[in-house]
Length: 273
Ligand code: ADP
Ligand code: MG
Ligand code: MG
Image 1 (tube, protein in one colour):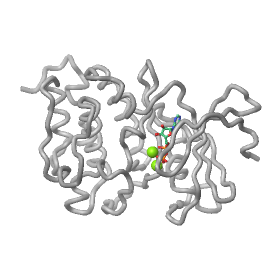
Image 2 (cartoon, helix red, strand yellow):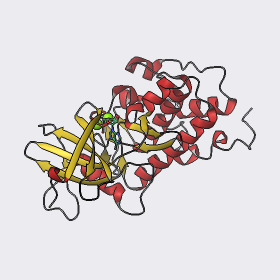
Image 3 (cartoon, rainbow, N blue to C red):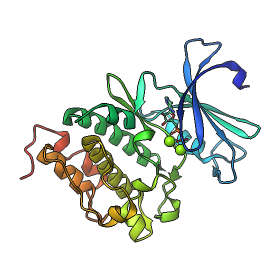
Image 4 (tube, rainbow, N blue to C red):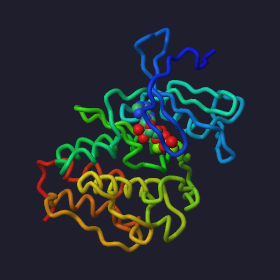
C-alpha cells in the first residue's frame, strides 16, 4: 500500500484557503518529484461516487479522476494518487517544476505582451474545453489556481476543490464555491447559471487580468453593473474578445466553441472593424 513514509517531504511550496502544499520526492524512484496537497477533513467536505470505489471519495479527487482517464490534457495538473490518514486528506499531485502562479507572473511582469497572453489563453481554453468534455465545472478559476512554467509559459490548471459535475440542470448560485470575484453575473442576477457561459466569462476575466495586471471587477456590484475600463494599448481584436466574453447576458455572450475561433487567436485574419 501507499503511505507517507514512502516520500521525503521537502519545502512548503504553497498555501491556499484549505491546505498546505509541499514538494516531496518518492524515495524509491528518487528523482520523481510530487506535490503533496495536505488538507484537514472538515464537516463541509463533499464526497462523490466514483466507479470502482465502494465508498464515495472526496469531490476534489472524484472530479480530478474524470480528467485523468487517457487521453489526458497537458494543461491540467495530474493526480497520481491520494491518501486518507486519520483526519487528513493528502493528494499526491504532479509537481510543476520551475513554475509560479499566474498571480505572481502577472505581478512580476509589467505589460505582458499579447503574444504571451495568447499563448497562455490558448492553453487555458484547452484545459477548460477538456473539462467540459469530461463533465467537470472547475468553479474556481483565478490566477492563484493557474501555474505557469518559466521560461516556456506552459500552463497548468490546479485546485479542483470547488469543482462540480456538469449535468443537464443549471447550477444554483449556492453551487458556486469559488472566489466571489469569479462569479458570473447571471449567478448573481438570476441565481442560476450554466457551465459553458460561466467558463466564457472566466476566460474574459482572465484575459483582462493578464493584460491589465488587475481584476476587471472588484465586487459583486461591479460584476453586475460596472463598466469595463480597457487599456488603449490593447489591439482591437483583444478588446473585442474581452468585451464579447464579458457580455453580461449569457445568451448574448460569445459561446465557448467560438472563443478559440476568435480572430485574436489567429493574428493573420483581419481585425473586426
Ligand atoms: P487550495 O485549495 O488551498 O487553494 P491549491 O491546490 O490551490 O490549494 O494549492 C495552493 C498553492 O500551492 C497554489 O496556489 C500553488 O502556489 C501551490 N501548488 C499547488 N499545487 C501545486 C503543484 N502541483 N505544483 C506546484 N505548486 C503547486
Ligand atoms: Mg487554490
Ligand atoms: Mg481550493
